[in-house]
Image 1 (cartoon, rainbow, N blue to C red):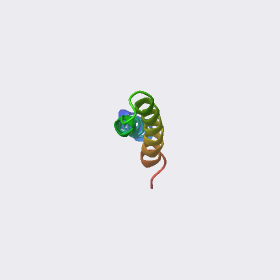
Image 2 (cartoon, one colour; image 1 turned 90 degrees about the horizontal axis):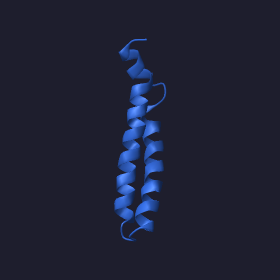
Image 3 (cartoon, one colour; image 1 turned 60 degrees about the horizontal axis):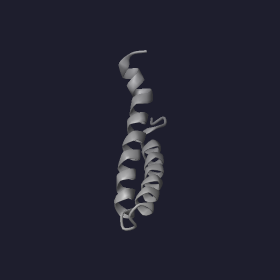
Image 4 (cartoon, rainbow, N blue to C red; image 1 turned 45 degrees about the horizontal axis):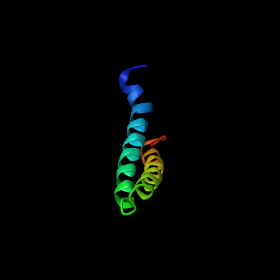
Length: 64
């Protein structure tokens, strides 16, 4: 398997999921920072999960 095939199959999916996770986590933590610890942590986790799912949905799968 060449690098291009590997990137097409797995790389785009992994980078989309990781990017969604990071951006969702940062956004959620920013919004939740109104409540110092619990809000920042809880909203960061919730934002990370939803960002991961959105990133995966947008970048994974067979697009023809």
